[in-house]
Amino acid sequence: MIPLDQAQEAVLSRCRRLGAVRLPTGEARMLVSAERVAAAEQVPAFDNSAMDGYAVRAEDTSPAPARLRILGTLAAGDFPREALSAGGAMRIMTGAALPPGADAVVMVERTRESPDGEWVTLDVSVPAGNHIRRAGEDMQPGQVVFESGCLLRPAHLGTLAGLGVATVSATRRARVGVMSTGDELVAGPAALAPGQIRDSNRLSLLSLVAESGAEPVDLGLARDDAEEIREMITRGSQTCDAVITSGGVSMGSFDLVKSVLDEMGAMSWMQVAIRPAKPLAFGLVDDVPVFGLPGNTVSCMVSFELFARPALMKMMGRQSLHRQRLAALACEPLRRWPDGKTHFARVVWRYVDGVYEVRSAGGQGSHQLSAMAAANGLAVLPDGDGVDTGEPVELICLGE
Ligand code: AMP
Ligand code: MG
Image (cartoon, rainbow, N blue to C red; front, side, top):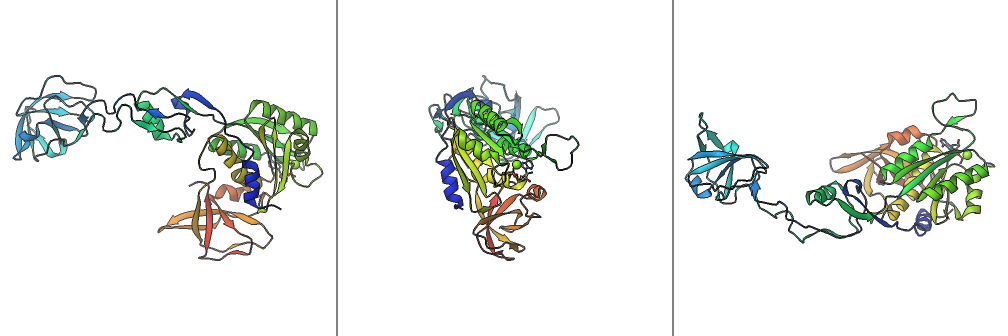
């Protein structure tokens, strides 16, 4: 058996960052930018109101209360050309351009209008600049908005949209083919013959791929037949940036993925000192990474988390490849036995009074997918006999 970090390094060192493409800004979510973007225009484009209220001359507001004549109404989208005269006020909505001459806004909550709508009484006096958003306060022309290598989160895409930037260059989204292997597997809801089981790994893995920000491609289900497996991996390697298989990598007589990958590409077959997910086959077929994940339903998901996901992150140019690990406390015993492996227990975490508390999510067998579904994290249990109530434990967060 080899330690986890060594196995991860063996995988990561053979995965390369994908090339960059220029794509519509709206399709770049969670990709990594491959260019520096500078603002071509100022944002906001003009001085405007931060509140619904009245545009005024600050000097007209003191002493409070001040009574001003209402000269009109400015909605967002209006662009006033006429100056506000002394002793006057204009109703102004959030985002509307300030009229020339006005240098402050009084929020509507601090005002009273006369019943005929001719006059407004301001209950407060305000300084110049009050509730005004200045032109260029967010971004100035020429200002670098973000550098190459920046993860494009929703706010970045909104920023680009706000600057009228229609396309952006980013490291490509990885296309990832997913296939299942096994004579016993049935796809879909068809009745099961004795001994058959349903193919659940394919959907779990396709979903994990999508969740990681890559593009999932369903390659299908291959029988335990070397030719069929070879054809499916070939199709995957020709049309995708990575291929993920499940099943057929352990010690059984029909575990053909290992031998097929061995023939097809520079393959390493590893026995990793972890539980679940000890066996892992990994190789390059025509430079395309192929992950042979174990067949057990929980094992294949944990193996994806520990090996495939970080590799996809690297391929897509991400800086942080691994999920965040947090210091947590066990709020019930998380038992295991010494076996030379690191265990990844399926747990439920809650954040209570500043502490991450974890408890078991249920049955810890590598086939007990319902506990994986109930879990929102993995507790890392180093070799030994586990942790007791109240003891610290490392937590990998998988969700909320
Ligand atoms: P294997 O490594 O192919 O021997 O598979 C290990 C275990 O995982 C066996 O019990 C398989 O039936 C099961 N298994 C393999 N592939 C899948 C799959 N796609 N969906 C659900 N269970 C699977
Ligand atoms: Mg099998």
